[in-house]
Length: 453
Image (cartoon, rainbow, N blue to C red; front, top):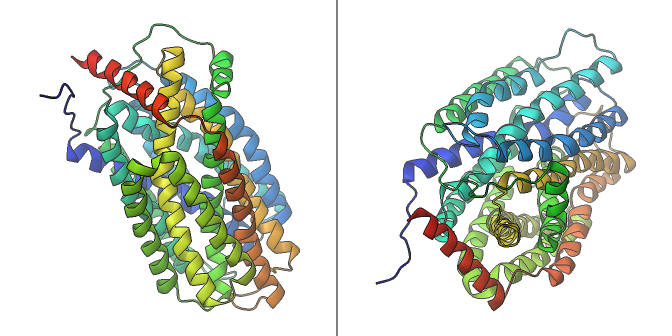
């Protein structure tokens, strides 16, 4: 008889966790994935330069709050655990700040007033997002100790993550207010989405709990805790990939708003190909990861995605090329949703093998220190590149020049292609692969299994 502990996470726990994560991400994607930039620049009339400045200033705040929260949450002690209090009690404010983003504040319509509103709203919204999303992000690592049980959660999360990405991609282009229109219907829909998300996130916390806690009494100071992360070479390489994934997710959702305004490919066809690529990718990566390994699967994914993005940037006016690009993007996103979390788990496990301390929150916080600026850079890069090609925010949909249309494609896909090539090169130096690492993983798993006996 095998000595392996058969560990099961209840289906209800997985469903509620993934639902909460999905809606938390949906709100963030609607707001930071291009929706806020579009609303403030094209609808309210904030200048592109000021909007870009908001994102740059905001990146500085992100550099501070994420590692700080990771450090605090690792040391939180309550009857609910280290993570659940932040999810449960932060959900109301998170939804509230989302809702008030889409209402013009009584500050006047000047550029300074719009700048202040955008910056303040983004600051408040992201502070709550950090507390909730970071806690949800690390929950799979605390709900289970075996890779098999965690893997089952990640596979379910892929479906819900696709929903979290798909909802903004479909909903926002359909409901966004055009310049001069009455935004009431748009605002009511956004309010409904915010209230529904609050209810699901709040209720979810009654259906799952943390199993894995920090077993060591040793504590690192915040400075040493951060620097220890950066001494982990596998973490540095992981961050190159993690930054790229967040950058591409953000710029895809921003670019698609502009793409369907100016190009003839039907939305249903484009999203159908994107979904088909994602399904194919899920099947491919989940089956081949056992034989090819996480490292090789990720390398292949980066190359395929990079080629598709490059062709889209140059030849994307052709619907056949665009269709192939949407399919390869789906494969890439599936890889990002399945392979990157597995890699992250390996990085955290390796850190534990070296330090003896379980630090999911700190790693999640430092990860956000790197990846959150990717959101700002993606928003800023897109509007600046498109503007350089002559994109005119004052025009109605479908009236941009041919050169401006090419600018949309370049702003959308050129930088992601370059980043994916860098990722492929960096993977050559990723150390967590091969027999030696497999032995280390077995030792770590045995340690946690023994602690449960």
